[in-house]
Image (cartoon, rainbow, N blue to C red; front, side, top):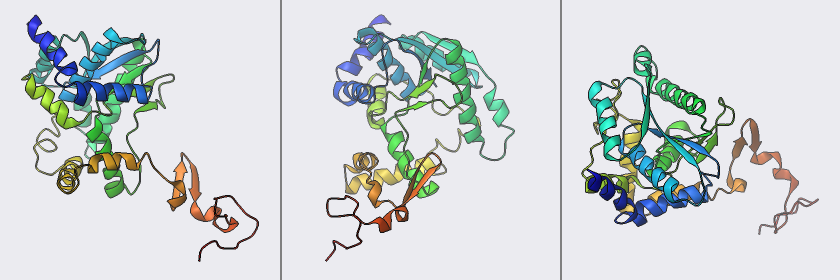
Length: 292
């Protein structure tokens, strides 16, 4: 068993060093996700993404020059006993010292007819923040990866009529002093799947009683699944389409937007359109056009 545990961990920094470990480090460093003295609640749902994140965080904690603490937190929202035990078994296999706490979120949202998934997600996030705060943590880490980010961008555009992205870190609005970080931000899902297959690891998928027969059966019922399929088709035409989508929200030119807002502060291009600009982009007192 010890040899297997060592093999699984070493595969992250050997066979998958470029695709997983280096991308993990890039996200942590580029977005300054972890700072000296942090105590991070590494939130494990039991799926492949959060389990791999936990292993990466564990190794980072062991070898990083920046000292920080980590708690490996598992919330049970009402999993059946098979899934609950699967999480425990995988944590032991991956040598993760998990702390599991119980809730009854699934029972609560089962009575909701309209958008139970949204309510479930908010409740789970709230419970994680509260438990992490009670344990003395100042951050929670979630396992969202690169594909989640670009899918969120397209979902916002195609279904939400807005341009927004899943941020690498956020300040909590309801839990003072707490932050949310996403250390897997630059890691692609296909590489996570490859790591799991290479080590013959089996993780739970969505264990929610409401959605286990819908969103994860590849039947197209999930909006996120629709977007995932769309990106897959676009990738056949343009192999770099995913990174281009990602970079599009890094290279936003506000002068080319009809309107935008920062919180409740809204701006429209007509607000200062008639003030006039010269060729260098500086405001002028006249309205002489520089166009031919």
